[in-house]
Image 1 (cartoon, rainbow, N blue to C red):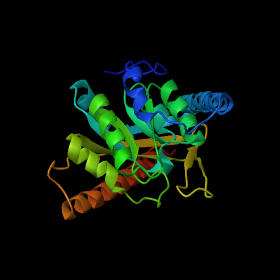
Image 2: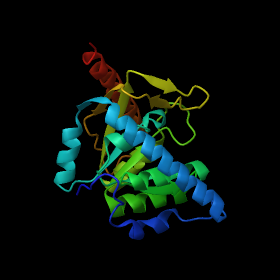
Image 3: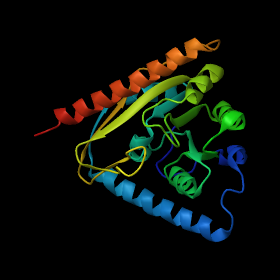
Amino acid sequence: MTMKPGNPCPDVARLEPFGKGPYLSGSRPRILARFLGHVCAWLLRLQWLSWRKRIEGLERVDAMIAAGEGLILVFWHGKYLPLFALLQGRRACIFTSRSFRGEVITEICRLFGYLGVPIADHPGKSGLEIMGRAIAGYRRAGIAVDGPLGPLHKVKSGAVRLAAESGLALVPASVASSRKKVLTGRWDRMEVPRLFSRIGLVCGEELRVPADADGAELELWRRRLHDALEEAGERAEILIGKDRR
């Protein structure tokens, strides 16, 4: 099922309780977070209209969605910003941090048609259970696999475990832009594409982790996912190179 950009997900009420908690107290922080979310979403839409987009592999993702197949889209934390606009209209739950920043991202998710599910920065077993329940209910999810606190480009084991337990395919995705601001003061070196950039989006071949994978085999799949994300990033750079004049 796809949705018109900007429409909220149809069954938010069923999944919202997964992320509830007292991480923002008082109405003012929530109002400010929602205001900032609206501003960020508006700016992203403006940028999206100006970008020259080259896309590879997204048709496979859309075919999986059309067939009713679940999937977990995975990406590096520093690459997630343009994905809100590039993938808009595709129903999914997105895991965010339980913080003011996470509340802003949750609002951006809502405005682009996704469901933001807040998770603690150090989720532990309870956080993985929440993620598992959300994935079981929604069947499509997005996870920054080196987030929320890094280290940079180190795949955490959670996404691989969730794929094994849920039976959903992992789909690596990466973005490259010809003109961007890199926030070097952040651990993730977040990339913010500029107006009128050439944008390359690559969705790689899906990875299917066996349900009985554990120990050394899970570590093997974690390394495979890392390599697949790096390869997707390299291919995205090639895409924007192809578009140079």
